[in-house]
Image (cartoon, rainbow, N blue to C red):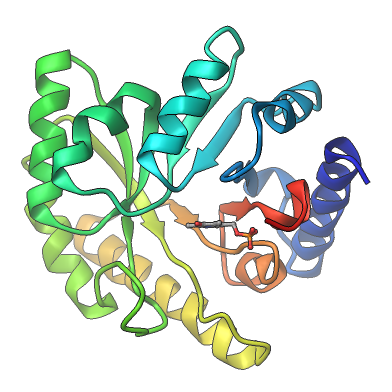
Amino acid sequence: MGVAENLAAVEARIAAACAASGRDTSSVRLLPVTKTRPAADVRAALGSGYTRFAENLVQDGLAKAEELANTPATWALIGHLQSNKVRDALAFASEFQALDSLKLAQALDRRLEGQGRRLTVLIQVNSSGEDTKYGLAPADVPAFAAQLRPLANLDVTGLMTLALPSDDHSLVAACFERMRDVQDRLRDADGAGWDELSMGMSRDLEIAIAHGATTVRVGTAVFGAR
Ligand SMILES: *Cc1c(COP(=O)(O)O)cnc(C)c1O
């Protein structure tokens, strides 16, 4: 199957998952993850009407964005970012979904200030508790969020996570439930906001949607095995 057919199949999965939990299909955004895939695949997705894409590595994202500079493609960085790569990240990304330290937030804010622009940011949460995963422990997010408040150039709109890679539905669901708990605590503190929940990938997007995902980041199911 080609990219267009795969996108249609994933859209159908999203629609079914939304229907199953009484949600409007338009409340979930499909963010195609193009990592390791050639620019031709991005062009195919552009042909299906997608303009927003995600990469997990700064150098790859930068290269692909340059290759596709004459298209409407825009880019989200969804992988770990080191403070010394902030400049390269901001050269291609208009959204960053993996914020996990105050030092990084300050470095981003400082450079954005100099450029006179803002960046949409999500806090990465380690909802599975795995040592190998980046992100804040759920309990640490409210205090971290409070520290971000003075950083005027960051639009912190929500949270991102990767669930446990498990075939056990209940363990995956528990990760997404923790995200809802964190979101509830943030809203209790702030009154509103924190609308964005970026969670769910090729294997677990239905479970994520059942637990309130607003963005699903899908690579394999759209572009094939890496
Ligand atoms: C690769 C990646 C995805 C997409 O994973 P698939 O299993 O290919 O759908 C989602 N989020 C992040 C952070 C990734 O690095």
